[in-house]
Amino acid sequence: MDSQYTAIVKQQGDWWIGWIEEVPGVNCQEHSRDELVETLRVTLQEAIEFNRQDAIASAGSGYEEERIAVSA
Image 1 (spheres, one colour):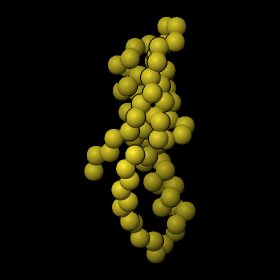
Image 2: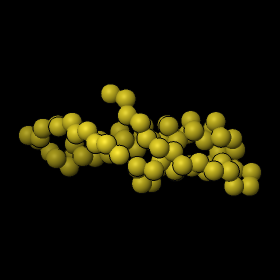
Image 3: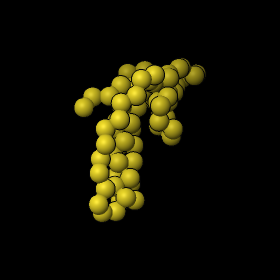
């Protein structure tokens, strides 16, 4: 399932900095805009997988997964 997220990006001096609007803690900086967008993508994927594994570990056994759709 593909999901879309919003990256907030800006150039500050020699650096490009960015945040993923919907996921606290996903922020990066790079020397170019293209590098920043790719680093944000990778960091977001890692954060989602980490959060998923953490939620499953916290739930223990006997849990169910439910898909939930939201609109902005």
